[in-house]
Length: 193
Image (cartoon, rainbow, N blue to C red):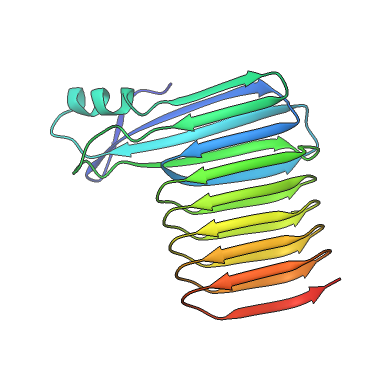
């Protein structure tokens, strides 16, 4: 855990670490989530958390209530960042994860942030309450749901199911069925095999 610093009107704190690899990855966050697969045998992470507060002590209290909790249990690495329980503190987090390309399944949920996933061999399940979802170079299928943003998929090696309540859906190539639904945007599909 880094010391708290100031960045404009925000107090900022970073946290990073590494866990042994597992076949499954589960992330629940209150902000942006970025997961990139690579040839590696561990899951590394870095989170940047920002909050507005009247003092550094108040900021520390709020950030202490919104720490990243990361653990490996069996075949699953789990990461969770909760909101600190404030209404006007402008809390925001950005979680960057490097996972093994061989990850079989990544389930990612974000309350109020964009989700980006790339270079994962298995399937992806992504759910955002208010942000865009992007996935590319995924070996398995993709299930993507967002209540307020576009969905953009690149090369997907399995079936796709996408639903957005307020955005465009763009799909490059899919190897399998593609079920796409939007309540407020266009749908563009490249190649479905």
